Image (cartoon, rainbow, N blue to C red):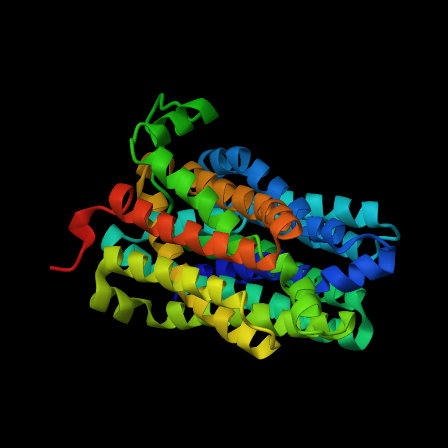
Length: 397
């Protein structure tokens, strides 16, 4: 791994850590501010929707002015927003800080992945993205685990302070190291004279590919189905396992961390899985296993069984998602930053809408119905991916 790869990985880690820091804290934050758990769960949406909304602008900015420069500015903004959230005296200001953090976080992981698309040919790109996923998933996993454990000892503000400190370290490293590393790197090829690099032109190149509409629709659905349950793991444990509010925060953090561990298992074994299954069969296995894992959550009343199911779901999810990510890096090579940013916008739009939809179904029909609905949706999504997105040529011979 090159030094620049490692700097980008630290920035991606900080973004992943900030993303999942809130999920185990829904119950204690709701108790602290005197709001309903469903209202506190909207902190996830407050991060995800601005993250998604920023993508149509950040992708073309990265394509036009440089991905590394955009990453530097965004990681610094993320650090400041997280620090403000740590000090928020009211729930409204905490929501505002998450909105700002989501906007700046939008310039990190998508442009890092676009940079990998520039650096690696397609046949090696899924491996490279898989390695970067190790850092992203580790950040997400530790965000959940640290939040649950730190809340139990010093409270939820301590967990947010750790997220702010992590982003600050990433920002310092990015601003110091990236200029030095780029000074010794080969200059990127110049744009063709007269080439139109406007937002409209860049996205026009993306949607010239007829696969684009299927790819972006699939990632929105994926975000809804996979991440809708996350803010409700704590309330689910309170309702079904009889956990106290404080215990549920700790247990939810560990259970959601298991989802990340499953992703790490995938990241460490991606080459072997691809060699064994090929991309298409990997997508099918991932969708089926993730769906069945979510269905199993409806029957579990002990937190560590919930953790096991989420661990299986995590590995299965990344089997499907990594394949979609790789397709996103190839859908428009001349506008790769824009293409990957739009992909991230779709994912975070889905993950932002997911808690709203999952919570609505759970409130009306119960947790079991909501989880079974997620299962059926994931099965259908897997069928869509192999029929419309992943080409047959990528199957093993």
